[in-house]
Each structure stands twice: as structure tokens, then as C-alpha cells.
Length: 120
Image (cartoon, rainbow, N blue to C red; front, side, top):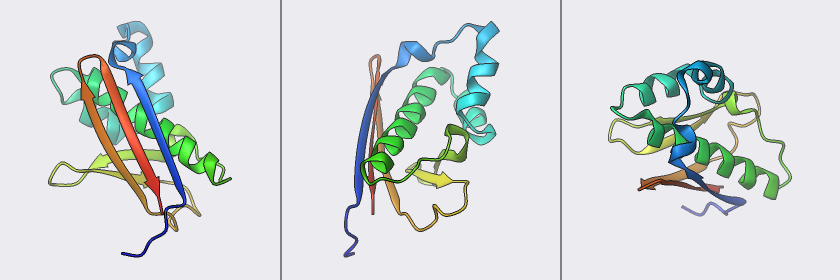
């Protein structure tokens, strides 16, 4: 692997921010997350940590792209999914972004969620 790192990004979010009142929850979720992400997060006993860490990943991706002068696609065009082994993967549903290899690491503990992104 001789890929050169083009961009990096990191973001930290408070999980409690994602404990959204039911009356506002749906409109917030559809603005930020894809249907697959919402379905995955809602399958958890407590969706807030999964929502927060995915949001952090999207923010980290924005930072990584802006650091290399690339316009970032909207939140809904970025999907944080999981491989069969549970490892997170990034899928960008917008033309022209398939040339980027995006690596992501996610973690959450207590009330904090963090994502680190490397673009090669």
C-alpha cells in the first residue's frame, strides 16, 4: 500500500445532543442521515451513540475534504455503513467521489463520540 494521505479530519460530538425529542426527531434524522443509517441506528437499544458517531464521521469527512480543497457532498450523500465484521466503511453517493479512498475509525464512550478520517 503506497497510498499517499491527502486529507485528515477528526470530530468529537456529545452523545446527549442526539437524544432528540420525538417531535423533532424525524425531520432532523432525514436531513442528516440516509435511510440505511437510520435503520441501523434505530435497531440499537439506544440509537444516540450510533447517531452521534456517524454525525462525527460526516463532520470529519467535511474537514478532510476541505483541507484538500474539495467541495464536500451533503450529509445525505455520505453513508457510514458497516462491513459484515462490524468495521465502519464510508460510501459517498455522489458522482466524482469514487476516486477517493476514505478510511474511518469510530468510537464512543460515556457521553462522547469521536471519528477520525483519512483520505488517500
